[in-house]
Image: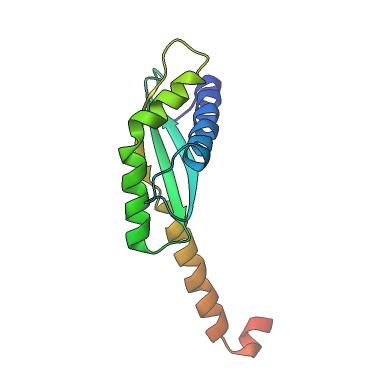
Length: 125
């Protein structure tokens, strides 16, 4: 998908604002660990935004609880984004878990394990 400069600019504003809101303006006790907004994808008309989140520092159940709490606070997050929005229409936010980063870490761990299993003489060649 080719993105325009405007889409990139809007995505950057949404990413920064949502990160700030989740970090500093939500007080739900279910939100644990570190939440990172990894990516924002906008529709071509800038009316919808898919926001991808990675959650670290907690187990899988804790990640699910944190994600559910953020989704539950969607209207609050949307209203705080609207307050900082310079344009006429603010995109409707939709949240999703970003699994790409976790998959990348898993692949890196597998490569690391294979590298450790190689005999020393094969590593030097």
